[in-house]
Image (tube, rainbow, N blue to C red; front, top):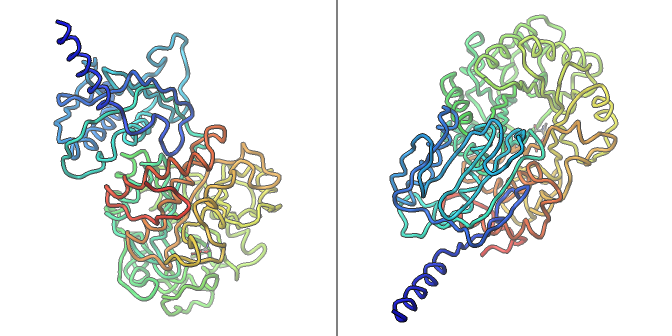
Length: 521
Ligand code: TNX
């Protein structure tokens, strides 16, 4: 009997050793709000694990996505079934009132979730489906790196025990993709959406129109794409999104709790539209198609009523295809439309957007135009002392911060890295990470800041691989600024946590810049 006891405890000890996770509960990007490890409560995914979920269609879909995420690498069936839970399960609960284990009735913050890892189950609880979705992204990072494999791997699927309670600092967390300078297919855009979702970003801004190309079909002005969509930087090819393509993007994003923000850039950056419809041009003469990379030379005629018919038709059709609340009207670098001609134009366009029941977003150049309810300025400056923008905020504008010298993903990492520009400086990972969105702009209160967006202009970017090289590892840095409270994060900790993402990107086939600032394993 003594030998049997000994053998038993040796087996148990060996088992405990195997069950030890390689990842700590706090090794998550972006950093969670609160992390309470329970080392005795590690969970191992059993072969008969099922995903149990509240009987709500949006919650069920998150559960289905969790199963889809885990099946390729684990090779397990992972059926998705309704609650109540059985042992060994992954449990997703939509709790309108109080989370498990709490006595007081508690309000869930927007997008908040709670993740409880115990020996018998992993439970994700949230007030809304987007909270459950974010919890799933956290769980994904707590599983062994091999979870990123597209084919089955022999692995003990250990999750470190304990509790995470997590919520975002800012409600708007996004990235922008310029599909006008170079076009990217629906599949490319969907993969970009996956990258956003992984790091809890919830907005994708599509820069749909520019001098070099018009990329969204508009039924009432068909030459915009037929003619205006036939060029890009450096030449062709002819490419744009049909209404069906765009709906596919919007639907794919919605399933991942990402809102699409469409931009129609006005009154400048419009050469492609003028080639298609010379009646919109100030001299009524079609300019030659433009395939270079200069800015600021083109504009639609702000003195012609036909221009406003065009704007109303285009924004009306784009709004009809877009479930989200935002319509981005551009407004940047219209150097040839000055003073009241410019502010008058922007004010009319803002009223058109308001008339469509949508919220205006514009680059911060629209600041001098009159306030319209709820409008949002996307600030892309490089000097945080901007009295014109501060004044617009005093008149009621809100802000999305995309400082050119911290958040512009088309800037180079370092002098010797390929791809990108340097007009706003070089942006290594530390520079992307080292600023505070709440205090970045002088004389602007933190409450005016809706969040952060990382734009990727694509004059020099031609493929998904190149997008990924510029995104990773800076996009997760900006995602952490937007999600995590300053008290939960530091550069030192971020470097370590980010390092752990490298092998995951490698396993998932994601290209990244192996920045020398990060201690990659
Ligand atoms: C400025 S930033 C632009 C874009 C260019 C970008 C290149 C902004 C609102 N406008 O048209 O693509 O610089 O970095």
